[in-house]
Amino acid sequence: MKFTRITVNPNQMGGVPCIRGLRIPVSTIVGMVADGMSEEEILKAFPDLEHEDIKESLRYASEAVREREIPLVTSK
Image 1 (cartoon, one colour):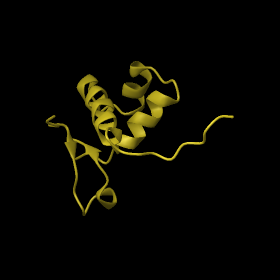
Image 2 (cartoon, rainbow, N blue to C red; image 1 turned 90 degrees about the vertical axis):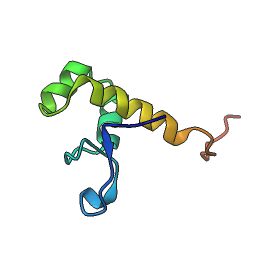
Image 3 (cartoon, rainbow, N blue to C red; image 1 turned 90 degrees about the horizontal axis):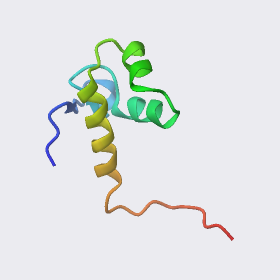
Image 4 (tube, rainbow, N blue to C red; image 1 turned 60 degrees about the horizontal axis):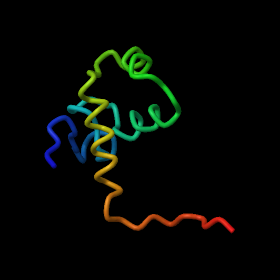
């Protein structure tokens, strides 16, 4: 999977994945979606973002957790 809108720069934002070189971390966008914000609300909060930035952030997050073991609390 190729990501054209996600950038990583060790000299910017501590090297965390960001959107198109902007100081907007992918994790911020994914967190906003997880908190139930609509795309319209996210775009209003970050006017430099575009629809495709949100979609690619979610694809990136999905790929980041694929094939990785994440410790979970098991239910009884």
